[in-house]
Length: 390
Ligand code: MUC
Ligand code: MG
Image (cartoon, rainbow, N blue to C red; front, side, top):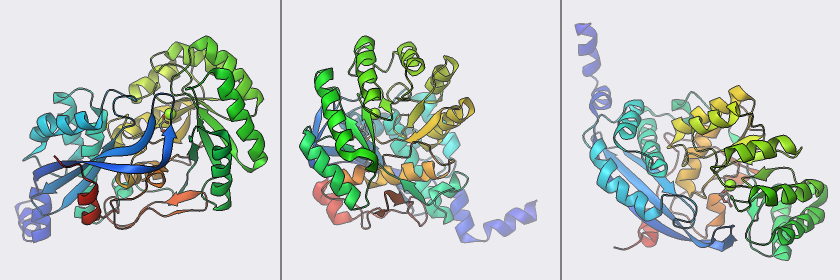
């Protein structure tokens, strides 16, 4: 045993791996404009703000992470500013000086000392995994057990707020072989207006594309019954989060009432929510998001609950930029083919990027990035340009 240890410690890279500690963690608010206004039931976005994490380790390796939400505080209880502040004030001190490589132990430490803050935790776990992958020369998907796919389908969200513009945008995306599934953001208007808008787009696209809707919790249950019936009749194939997140019983009733499947999004944050919905008799699908589940391990726990319960999988986004999108892709790649595909189009909604090589979107999907860690390199000039100045 003593001889073995002696042999191992003679190799400097092994020594560095065994003893690497987390040295510093920097967080940056990065504001990137969107290519057009993105209209959801609770807000209209003209810009996306990402919290970028740069985690440096004593072996010289840097891990990158991203924590992103939608529309300040309008989507959920964490805003970009609170994510940054809570990481800097509460989470960084829990990590500095800790061994770099044991992601499970560090996750447990964060969860023991800090409640909630799933987006902040996701950003930190992403940075830990990126660093560990770079250290070992392995892609993050391999750290998670190995990729089963290297190309994942990606839908596009039509949310310009204008029916004609949405139809033009959809045809452009089809012609470019970029996307052939579309999600429409509804819930900001009266239900009849929304239904007319969706039905017009579905009719224009016909069999060339599938159309789904995301209501982002805007309806009460009786409005949902009326709206979903009309959307089902119009040939819509999936209804996302029609009623408030906490109304699990209502969501289960809707799932049992209609043929068109329900997609639980805000209602299902982590494995515990997934278990409650499944145990209550929910059928349909779960939108997986690393941000909701506190990172890649947490979201895969939720996916496994869904799989055990026969609930479909969907690779969701909080409109992350390239770093958060790449992290999600590494997690999705380890799962069996997701029946509802993914919506990992976040970088395409932004006018610019902060990485040297963007993700490769082609043939109605995106390639899993190659290379160690996330397979992503920062563009320092762009990062400096778009970082919010104090
Ligand atoms: C959500 O609720 O699904 C995903 C796509 C999009 O446009 O918004 C997000 C959030
Ligand atoms: Mg949603």
